[in-house]
Image 1: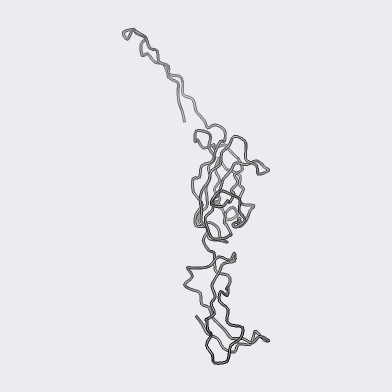
Image 2: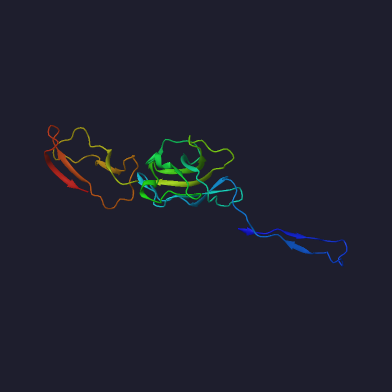
Length: 220
C-alpha cells in the first residue's frame, strides 16, 4: 500500500509552539518482502481414490508479514503423509509430476486446468498434505516454512469383485449350501465399496472344464 512518514515534535512545556507540531513526508509505496511462507487459500477436498480432487488446492506465497509475494515464481511441492505426519506408501499421487508446480504472481492454482489437477490413489483413511517451497532439486528453501492440511481418502469407483465366503469344495446335487457364498465390491486399490446401490451381481454355475459354459445363473 501507499504510506507516508509523520514526524511529531513534543515539548516538556505544552504551551510551546512546537509542541505536537507535525510534518509528513511524501507518499511512498510499501511492497512485499521476500518469500517466507505459504498460505492455503483453498484446501484440497473430496479425495476419491483414483480420481482428481473434487476441490483443487490453491496455494499463495507470502512474506513474513503475510503479504502475497506477487512477483514470486517459486516452486511449490505437495507431499502426501500419513495422519501422524510420517511418510507413507498407502497413498500416492495419481500423477506425481503434478505435485510440484511453479507459482504465477505468487500463487499456485492446481485446478487451473486439466493438466495441473491433483488426485490421490490409495487406501481409505486420513492423511496430511504438506506444501513446501522447494528448489529445482525438490529441497525446501532455507528460511521458509511449510503449510499442512488434513484430507481423507474415500473409496473410488467399483472395479472388481472379491469372494469373501467361498462355496464348499464339494456338495451333492439338490443340497443347499451350508453357508451361502459372499462377494463384495472393491475399487482398484482394494478399498471396500460401501455406498454402491446401483451395481448388480449375477452368480452363475459354470463347469470347471469350460468356464464359458453356463449351467445355471442367478442375480442378487
